[in-house]
Length: 274
Length: 235
Image (tube, rainbow over all chains, first blue to last red; front, top):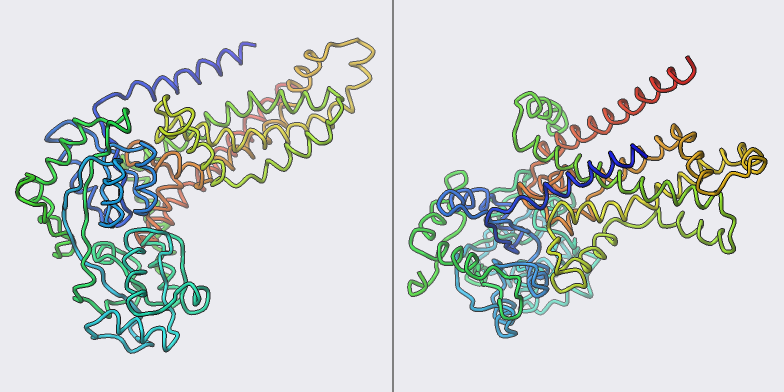
């Protein structure tokens, strides 16, 4: 019986330590691209130092992040799928959507370039070539922002990826990094946001085969989860974080974030919001 | 593979340098999995013992059920706990999602059936040995259960180690209910998943090596404990 008491005491102490950590914090549902690039490791300590607020980030695909926020499991949503974000706000799950920053998507592939698309200017043309030659292409296949953008491009190219899935078109159903790992392993082309690509550490002989097409624009938005719908939302702390990121100061910090001398995100919050 | 060779060096340097982040992650892994194990033992041992001493109708079905729950995929457990603890879920008001407590709950659900099923097997053998004595002494059911658990403790230690191994190694449940939040819910396995997705395979492998070293240490410690206890018992 003494043992049981001891177990109980140990258990209580564990639960107590969980409950006592009560400094101000907010929960942000966000995307793997922002986390994998090291953006949060860079910017959150600065925010913590300036405001004392801890920002906890759950990084999942945009689709899952939005779903989690709809379940009220977030204070702030920071993702990259404008249409889905606007739908989120229209459904009154979010208060207001602000542009935050952008970068672009790139098409990466093996140096051998089996489809011969390197140096092209148009993604749609390149996608048609990939499909015609049945060159391997790895898709996120996870309803993430990148996945949504990629599927729109296949649509524009008039290719039904569902019909090709499992053949030359491979949907990994995983995050950007895992999909890059799979691409390198299979010798497949894939589409990545530039930030994840630059910071990705397992490139092998992979390189950017196509970039600069305006359709590859990748906009990130930030939204406060609606406290009317979700009473648990820390609206003041969440709004403070949004205001800080969209202020001239926050936007400057975003622009300063570089990896190997390359800027990863380009701030573009509208001035009236700062 | 340069990753493979470099990983061992990196693992060693990480440990030797006393990397604060690493120790925080390792500490949380241990805290979550050991607490889940403790709870699972408190739940699983009595259930295992009860299934041994009580011959009730449908017992075979219950045993088959508990046994098959050993194969429950962690990601499904994670999903169920997420749905329960989400703000939109029935227990959302507790505000436990994305906390170490949520991870402990998920891992407990994951390994309690393992502890229950395996301890039933261990105690079944012991019961066969003790059955006549229990009958002749007219021992109550609860006393019999307690006697089985106390006398079967070495076998149950192995059961606990199996449970611990499953808990500390799983990633599917804790990444959903914990969210892999830096400095809050990041444990060894979710950190390994993150480093892998960053393409930093060397770091991922180094963390994997450290996790395996931890598992080996826990098993060795348990083995030593058992050896010491047995020496005392038969001295």
